[in-house]
Image (cartoon, rainbow, N blue to C red; front, side, top):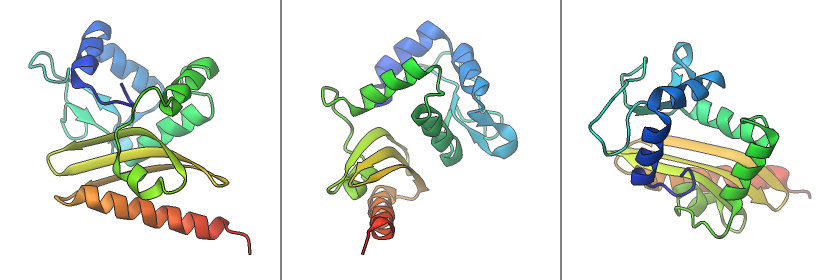
Length: 174
């Protein structure tokens, strides 16, 4: 569900697992930290008007910060998310050509000609979020971008291209 956004499927499994147990797992990895602006929070089933738990920082039903998204992907890259086997399985899902990815702004900006294994793209009102693991051409880096602006999707494409160009130039050998 992190590669292909499907609110109905997310709601099905959040109801099956329970919101509080899901948040306990996120908290056990330090992926929500109220003292440092919040983080990953799942406090409502998507599309359902049932139970709701607002995050302690902003009272939002769902939340994410760039800092905690980067930590999530770093734990995944270091085989420290759940277990080495679970981390490898999740990375395999992200890289699988059998599961189509949302095109995403980072993929549009950084994917040329390098590969950007998209992990998640999302938006709400005029908030835009995109994350990716960019690989190829001697590169392997994480990129997370979030903006609150009506033209945020276009900004994320420009941001991703500028970052990738900078890293490509910095990594180029004369």
